[in-house]
Length: 324
Ligand code: NAP
Image (cartoon, rainbow, N blue to C red; front, side):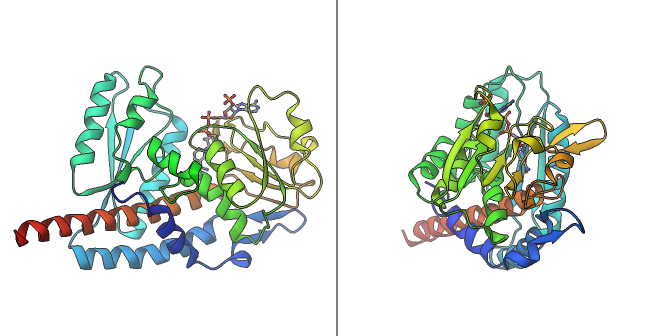
């Protein structure tokens, strides 16, 4: 694979330079411990700003992150603003590639092929959800795995499932990192994940299993959701359903990671009903301000790794041509 195989390892290394636990959590006066992603993300961004400056110094350009948006979607718009802001903060060029929802699947793939071939573009992410008429699989398959910094290509997904290094889906990685960096032990715990999507639930479950959690995965066909969620010592919810998990579906002291981002009126709500959950849980990620900020920072650690691998490969190719 071009550049992707060691992406996550280096990403973790960059991310690991941020310190852990105490900086990541705060307590409401009477509520549970709040696991906020902002402080961890700020530490990662600080390292990245220096790393991207060094990259520019060495290679003479700043890498570009291309974000492909097909049609318009409210949660995507929120996410896009966040990621473009993060790019700007660390010295990455964010390029929004907007494509109308009325185009053909071929036109979307052609656009991705152009980005694959563009040496300035180090990483490509495609905003989900895609319009129903654009087949997800065709689009995903067209991304160069070496530029697939959100780990959605089958090659990177396969590497994750085998336990090899590859680009990890950043949101799933963030859900696990926020636990680890908050000092919450995963090994041996009963961990329940609500959601089995390829981009969040499934990779989060695989990563939690990698951390030696005893993992169950719930989905829309699971009977009696509360029966299973009440068994959790750690609960990760990524269903895209605002307020799906309520306090009475939780056991006292559970740690909750709420991945959901739902635009409801003028509010952003998680998948967990915070008001009823806050008296039951020992710790919980707020929405907004939990997993989201960390996701973007981790994604840019993947971009740095991809850009470095690509620049080194181009330099090696140029040297070998010159030596002939
Ligand atoms: P998705 O593709 O729609 O998948 C949702 C999953 O939840 C599916 O596996 C679905 O089950 C399951 N589900 C839906 N309703 C359920 C119910 N009533 N009971 C149990 N399971 C249910 O969504 P996604 O892309 O994984 O995203 C999940 C959430 O994370 C969304 O709110 C999204 O906005 C958010 N998100 C956050 C970030 C971040 O940075 N924080 C990034 C990406 C996404 P089936 O498989 O049976 O359909």
